[in-house]
Image (cartoon, rainbow, N blue to C red):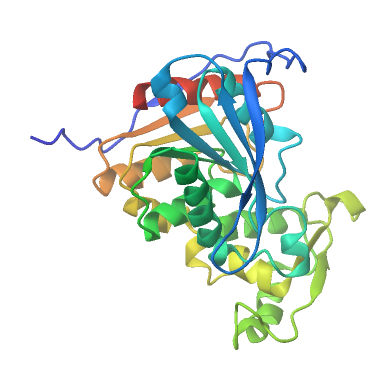
Amino acid sequence: MSPPRRQVPRLATQPYRMYRRPAFGRDDRDITTRLVTLKPADGHEWDGMLLRPRFGDPAFRKMLVIVVHGSVGNYLTGVPRRVAFELAGHGFSVMSINTRLANYGPFFGGGLFHRTPFDLDAAMQVARVNGFHRVVLLGYSMGCTVCTNFLANHDAPEVVGLCTIAHPMSLPQSLRERWQRYGATPTYDEVAEYARPIVAGDPDDPPGDRIFTVMRANGPLPTPENGEIWTYATWWSSRGPESPHAESREQIGRVHVPIAILQAGNDHLIQAGEGYELARIAAAAGNHDVSLDMVPQADHVFTGCVDVVSDMAARWLADLA
């Protein structure tokens, strides 16, 4: 008999504590690292880093956690970089990957969100080549939406779980609300009006696509650090009003593997109830294994407490393994 549907997933919180600072040169001495190359079917190449623990529980080491970055994306600093090393320190094999959304893809036209499934398919191929047959996708911020869209629309038998950190319900809605809050120029609706005719002919290679900038996109002052840079095609693909693949609230109900949603309690980019709503949608759609956890004082980038959210992910992964 199937377990009863969990209509309202549990909410657990984690105490805020002193950050376990990385000890570079020492905290990764039991981890081997190797650069890998992803080769999507549409002819591009992206890079990744494979981290394998030398010791530990064999069940942990046989399961690969694929970490997918947030906006812009890299694994030199920030949540994806530290989470990858923290989970490897817990004994899990980890592969941190870049996608077409990393670096300058959104700025120069190549970062089309709706084509990211090619990148995750390529990551699955790297996993298989390296002997992994059980995979967990772990996304951070925008990467949560990338992973959710992939699992909702593509057959990936190797994937046994989805873990998301700072998961927005809707990338377009989050951007629209932020731009409205800070008085961005041009406005969301103005950019949509400019972009629509450009992408109407061929959204994968639109003629006349060009770079544009937005002032006051991330703060109330018209300073460079508060600006954003896009092309009309990349904006439309991931933040436009007709971007269903960028809407986790529309996709997560079709994800049938166990889901862990880990949220920050003081997130200035994501509304407080978004994680709960995503968990509710998944459970109401019939997913019997959905959990929601929160770090109450954490901001969107988990300043000073990346290890806290990493420990939360590690506990969930240990149960899954």
